[in-house]
Length: 103
Image (cartoon, rainbow, N blue to C red; front, side):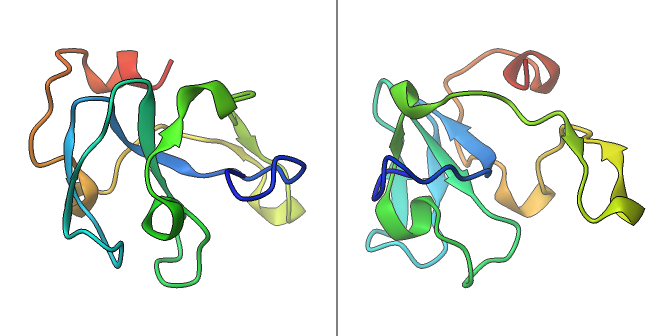
């Protein structure tokens, strides 16, 4: 977590450096993600500590990529990388495909 380096959080990557994103409750309605940063959001808007709370996150804070849901046990599954259609960047300067972005 950018606010507490001892705390680990798992969030969805919404935008990469250079992308223009429409925020959901951040102090600025639109943000161009700066170089060396990305924009993350939780699945529960309004109840999630994410970039809408603290802004773009430094790429240096990434430790790993989640690949599976293991709790609760009835939800065990591989995570399928997908971006909610209403959260796609307004403008993306990255030419990578969605598959390449998730790797």
